[in-house]
Amino acid sequence: MADHYEVLGVARDASTDDIKKAYRRLARELHPDVNPGADAQERFKLVTHAYDVLSDPRQRQEYDLGGRGGGNMGDAFGGFGDIFETFFGAGGRGGGSGPRSRRERGGDALLRVEVDLEDVIFGTHRDLDVDTAVLCETCNGTCCQPGTSPITCDICRGTGSIQRTVRSLLGNVMTSTPCGTCRGYGTVLPSPCATCQGQGRVRARRTLPVDIPAGVETGLRLQLPGQGEVGPAGGPNGDLYLEVKVRHHETFSRNGDDLLATLEVPMAEAILGTTVKVPALDGEVELELRPGTQSADILTVKGRGVTRLRGQGRGDLKIGIQVVTPTKLDRHERDLIEKFAQRYKKQKPQLAHFQQGLFAKMRDRFLGV
Image 1 (cartoon, rainbow, N blue to C red):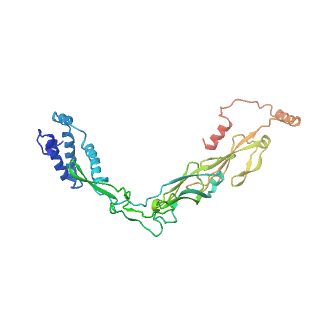
Image 2: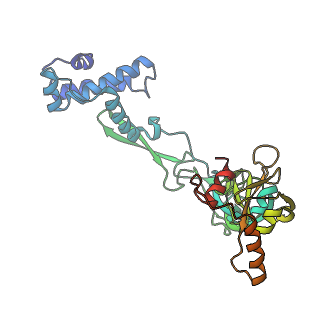
Image 3: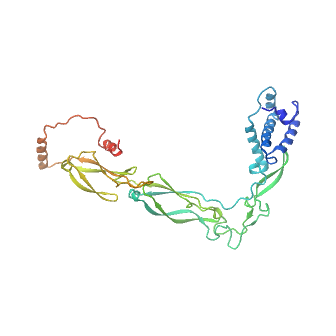
């Protein structure tokens, strides 16, 4: 590391005033606003760090005793950079980048929309009412009464900033602050629009047609570019985000692109087998129950599920079977069951591998576990 005294060009017994004078001279010469070269910037870091250490009695004493003295140069330069931002304005470039524009991009908006499970299969269209900022029709975003226009601020003369001379360690430096009269715009409105109060936009409700694609699911956000709020002074619109919520369905549920449901089958039909038509979300489905159908059997109807969001085709409709055992029998029905049982009296209840229950078993088969 370079010797701090050599960096500043002073003797080791230099007084505090000598150190300050040496630093001011070098800082004026090497500051990036004056000397933008890479070598000058590196020397400026060294000079700043050396001054930071030697101007503090405690750090100077530690340095003279062989200590490192102070933090690293990056920290010192960063802290000093904040001071120069105060002296020279934002970015340390005295005068800034000119007046700021009244036109700004509008904010993004989030809107939640609920759809039915039926809508998810093929997608749906909605006309949504949106409360948002729209372009002022009176001034068309100029912020002025019709027939008038902004005029140059006579305080900052259109620059958007006020410069003042401030005395500092480096001598007299120029500071730059936003003009309080025009708020940094460089112009003022002699006759602000009475409708929008000089904002160029107003709050209003508008109807937004939206196509919600097939395959969406709860929590999905759809981005509609340019459909958010119009910006101040007629600036470009922000974006609108639609967060989708799919309503609960009493019969069908969803697993990815598949639709799931349960079919309750009387015991006799399960034993003998039958053909049955059941309503699906997009029309009837014919199911064939083979003789001896068991609870938790799964019938799969290909291509009758949800349309894939980012792909082609549809998922499947999976129907789990639940055989319903009658709980109330009249005398005749009981006699028939007893006769049936006599034919199968050799078949006794017996232990089998433990299963988690009908619904857990059905779930595992639904999900392919």
